[in-house]
Structures are given as C-alpha cells and as structure tokens.
Amino acid sequence: MTGYLYDCQLRDDAVRVRRRTGHEKINVCFKRTVRVPDNSDTSQLPPDLGNFPLYKVQDYADSLSPEMVAKGGVFLPMYQREAMWISFTANSPFAVKVYVGCVNAISGETAAEDASTKARRQLRRAQGKLIQDYVTVPGQRWLDGIASGNGVVKQFVATRPGEGYTVEAQVTGHEVHGGLQVEITPAVVGPSGSIRVSVALLTGKKYDVCVPLDSTFGYLKKMMYKIMGMPTATQKLIYRGAQMLDDHLIASSGLCEWGRAVVLMEILRGGGWAEPPTAKPETKEMGLAAGGKIKQVIVYDDRPAEMWHKTATVAFNVQILNASAFESVTGLPPPETPITMETYAELGLPFFKLYEEDLGDVVHGPLDNVKSIGEMDGVEDPSFAVPIKPLNDDPDLARGKSKSKSQQADADGVKADDDISNPAGPLSDFRPRAGLLRDCWASQGHAY
Image (cartoon, rainbow, N blue to C red; front, side, top):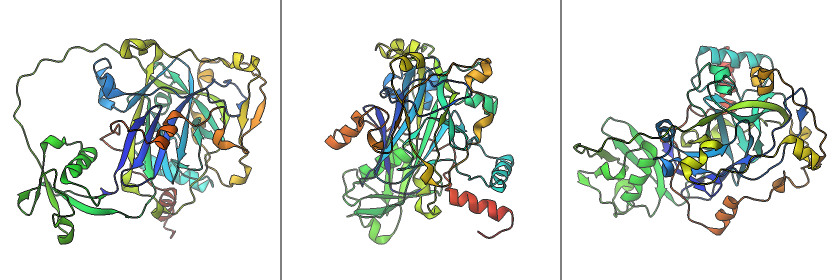
C-alpha cells in the first residue's frame, strides 16, 4: 500500500474523508426526501428535506446486534419504504463507488468479479455503452438511486430484508451485506511537506506511506493501525536493531536518509479469563430496494487512469436501522415520519431539474432489470403534478437546503471524531474507466 493517509470521520451529519497532510476533502451526506411515484413516469429530482442523522456504530456497540457491530462505520434511522438520496461536496477530485448491499449502484455488478463479469463488460462495450462503476466529484453532486437506464435512476428506498425486495436479493439471490458501502478514491497529489517511510512486516510484506515532516514514530503506529487494524499498544517498531520510541521524530532517525525500512513487529500478549459477553437485543437492520424512476445523469470519467491514487481508497459502511428500533438502541426519540408525496404535492412544493444536455457522453445504467417495489407488488402509484424549478442558476444551494452543519464545521475548524473507515478496505480494487476500457481492448487482441 503506497501513498498518503486519508482520515474518514463523522462530522455532525456527514462523513468526511480528508487527506491527513493536506486540504483535499470530500463530504458525504444522506438526505431525507419524498418517495417519488413508483409508476411508468420518470420524475424530476425530489427535494432535500434535511440530513439523516448519523451515529457511530462503536458508540452503541452494547445495544446493536453483533452483525451490525462487526460491520462498523455509521448507522442512520429510516422508516419502512422511506426514500433517500446521497449528496457529495468536494474541493478536489475524488472517485466514489456506492455499493447497495454488495451490488455496485452504477455498474450493477457484485464486488466479487468472475469471467461472466468480464463478458458482460465486453458486451456493453460492444454495444457502444460506456463502462464505469463509480461517480466523480466534483461533477456528480447527487446520487438518488441505482443506475437503471440512460439518464435514469431508480430511487433508493428502505425495506425489510428477507422479503426479496432489496437490490442485493434481486441481483445475488442472497441478503448478506445490507445497507451501503461507500468507497472513495482520491486523485494523485504532490508530496509537499511530507516524507516517505517504508514499513516492513516479518511476513515480508511492505507498506510505503507518506507522513508529515514532523511526524513521530507514535504517529506512524497510528497510521499502521488505520491501515492494518493492529492496535498501537501491540506494535513494536525496530530500526537498525533498536526499538523506536513513540515520541522520537522519524526525520531525525536516519531512516529516510538511509532509505531503509523500519520493521513492524506485533507484541503477543497472554490471554486470561474474561466475563462471558451478555446477550445483545436483536436490532432491525434494513436494506435498500428500488423505487420510482428519477431523471439523473451519471457523468462518465474522461480523466486518464494515472490521475487516480488507486491504492489510497477509503471505505466506510452505512447501516440502516429500522426507525421503530431506533429509540431502544440510542435512547433518543425516533425522527419524524417522512412527508408523503400526496401531501408534498398538495402544498404546491417543487421538484427540481438540472439541465444536463451539455454534459456529452453519460453512463447507461444497467440495473433496469431490478424491479421496483411497485413492480414487485403489482401496484402503480398515482401521478402528481408538481412545479419544476431549474437548478442550473444556483446548483450549490439547490434542492431546498443551504450547506450542511458538517460543511460549516469544516470552515470553523471544529475537532473531528474518530476514524470510522472499514479496516478491511474496499470490497474491490479501484479501476479507472480508462483502465477498464484498456482491459476490454486487450482481451480482444487490440492495442489501446
């Protein structure tokens, strides 16, 4: 693993990924909204009705199920068949994969690829369709659902698992992962103000990481905990036969000048008797199904493959807790029930349109075979006439809300929470669109 360390933290109502030694950052928010009509119509963009509150799983480990605790990350409360959309804001380029369960919301493929995955990709390429499994930010401000057509998504809608409605169940036949996993890959940045350190394990594996010039070995231990999950208390760093103390500066050790590696050893401690864990109450985890259709373009990535820092991907889990179980888990009152589409229309409130005809090539969503809740139930929602408000004049203050508290916190320099990234890393390696295209050409015996 090579490159800069990116922190993944909960900031009020958003997940923020930020480079430890720089200013590059992206905020991800999960938005409450109305559930658009699930029928043959394609709706414009529904409104921003505020952020879903986010909570760190580790803070409620005693009251969540073992399965949810094991996945970690954050959780949010949703009502049965409530809708959501995802908001992205960034000050430099990032590529973002979104998995619904273990199904990629853009490509429709599962994280575990096989020969059939490559065959489907080849077919899509032969049909003249763009192949891509992520969105790029800035550029893609929002994602309202799974890509199901040319400029169309099917809305994210919460549902109970075990009934066959979830995207994961329809694509894989199983419901194992649930919720969302978000994987964020930054663009390559320059090495200003940093030094590179090689960390070697006794297994022979080596990690090259960049740290600030004034870093201590204690700081390096924290970095290795984030990368490997090895607790700092069990780490021992050895350089040229001597153990490195936590408060010693890396730059003054001679490590960088000599170009040698510091060896990381794990201190194994003896076990002992511990109290058996108490049984945890069952908590109701939700999955995501497909709802009504929304007009939304997934813009393709025209950047060169070399632009993306493929080994610096940060992943985090977003789990969905049934709102009925929320109070028993957190001790907090559940959020208000969402406004219905009928009430929203009666109030004369608008949907929103972003004119995207000038964006050129777009990704054609492959998940059109995933049935919506209405299609599975055999029920069509009624259509509603709502005013349409154009967004192009002021997209940054769009869809009804100003910037979130988390963005204000960044501006005010408020201290961040602990890291919430998934220590297991991404479900699959990041591959730029240009790299996927190159693979397709190579498999057909062509030069790219």
